Length: 119
View 1 (cartoon, helix red, strand yellow):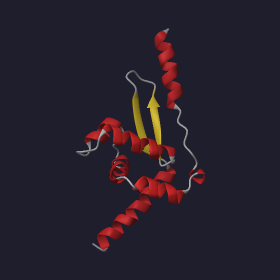
View 2 (view 1 turned 90 degrees about the horizontal axis):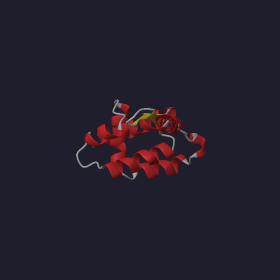
View 3 (view 1 turned 90 degrees about the vertical axis):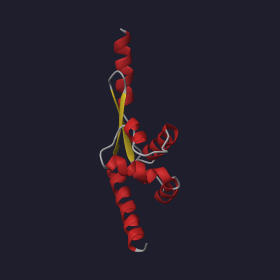
């Protein structure tokens, strides 16, 4: 009985709500997200296929669980990432780029290209 209740709760948590990009002031979002040095690293790792929080924390020395969770929550709130919780025991969570997130990362790539060109 308890297992069914836990599975039902996890299944409900598995549904994620992604804000539509039109609901977000893109300029404010950009300024807010890029203000942290870890945002670019987290987005790059997710794009490369590292989708689980534990693996993301281990991907760069100095990145803490607290900072990672703040970045993931903010990027999810802005609609750059989606969070998927799987109905498993123990719980498993993965993050993916949304279509809006793909465009956002393309913009960051262009900024990196400019940096390389003029450095």
